[in-house]
Image (cartoon, rainbow, N blue to C red; front, side):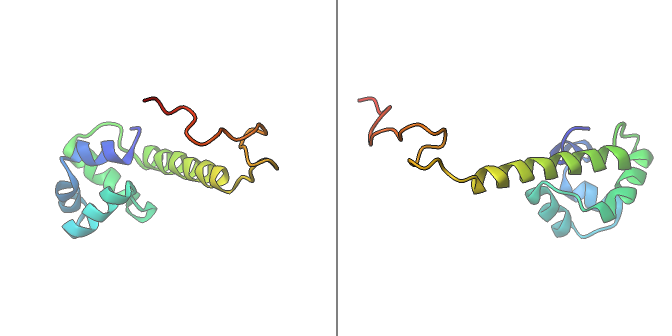
Length: 104
C-alpha cells in the first residue's frame, strides 16, 4: 500500500470505507479530501480490509503511509522556511531579470 488514496480506492471509495469501519460518510470524505486516515482508525481499517479480503492494508502499511506523508510535509515546510541567499536568489546566484524565460 503506497498512499491513503489507494486505500480509499481499494475499499471502493470513502462511502464504502465509512461503512466498513463504522463512521459517517462525511467523515470518510473529509479524510479522503485531506489524504489522511487518523491513526485511531488504523485497527478498524485493517480489520475491515481482512473481512473484505483486501490485501496489503495493515496497521503497519497505514503507519508507513502516514510516516512518509509526515516526512514530505516536513520537507515542504523546511523548503518554504529556508532563507533566501543574501542577493535574493535561492541558490546564491543573481535573481533572473523580470521576464526571463518568457517566450513570445
